[in-house]
Length: 326
Image (cartoon, rainbow, N blue to C red; front, side):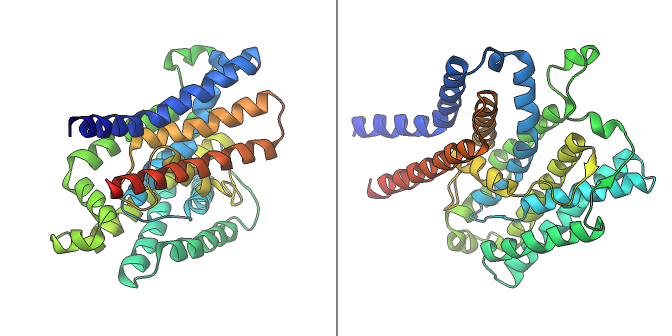
C-alpha cells in the first residue's frame, strides 16, 4: 500500500511538473543547437511578447476545457476585437473605452456561445465551429474586408518592444497584465465556489447537477468569461499590429487549445491549470522562435508543434487509463 501511495504521489508530481520540465528541455535544446542570440535578453523579451496573445486567450480556454467544453471561435473573436478597437479609436473614443469595447464585443460572442450550448443543448464543438465562421464574417463586414487604420495611442505600447528608457519594466506591460490575470484566474479556479463548480462540471456534469450546481449558469459564465479573455487577447494583438485586422489570428484557436492540452489540461474535462497553460504557450513560442532563428521553414515548426500536441493528448489518455484501472 505504501509503495502504491508513493507511486501515486510521484505520478501526481510528474503530471504537475511535466510541462515545466518539457519547457526547460526545449529551451536547453535550442540554447545548445541554436544561434548565440537565442539566449539573449532581447530574444527572451520577444518570446514573452509573442506568448502574451496566446497566453491571455489560454487563460479563458483553461476554464472552458476544465468545464468539459471547447471553444473554436477564439481566433475569430480576437480578430473581431482588433477591428472594434480600431473602429472605436477612429471614431474618436478614448483609448480605454475603445479597449473596453473590444473586450465587451468578445464577451457578447461568448455569451451567445454559452446560450446556444446551455439553452438549446447543442454540442460545444458544433456551436463554436459555427461561430468561428460567423464572428469572422462579422469582423470582415465591420471592416469592409480590409484593415482598419487607427490613430497611435498608448494601446500600441502594451506589447511594443521596450525602448532603452523603459528597460526597468523587464517585459512590456501586456505581459505583466497577462501574468496578473493568470494569478487572478488561478485563485478563482482553486479558491472560489465558481472554480469548484467548474471542476465538478468537467469531472461529471450529471453528478454536479444532482449535487445542486446550476450547470447552465456556470457554463454560460465560463464561455462569457473565456471570450472576454479572447477579447483582451485581441487588444494585445491590436497592440502588435497597430491596426484592426479581420483576418488576424486565423488558426490561433488551435494554438490556444494546444497550450492548455500541453500544459496538462484534459479534453475530457475536470483537469487543467493556469500555470500549465502558460507553460504550454511558452513551449510553442520557444519552438517557433528557435526554428525561426535557425532558418528552418514554417512547415517544420508546424510538424514539431503538431507532434507535441499529439504526444500530449496521448499521454493524457494513457494517464486516464492507468487511473481508471488503479
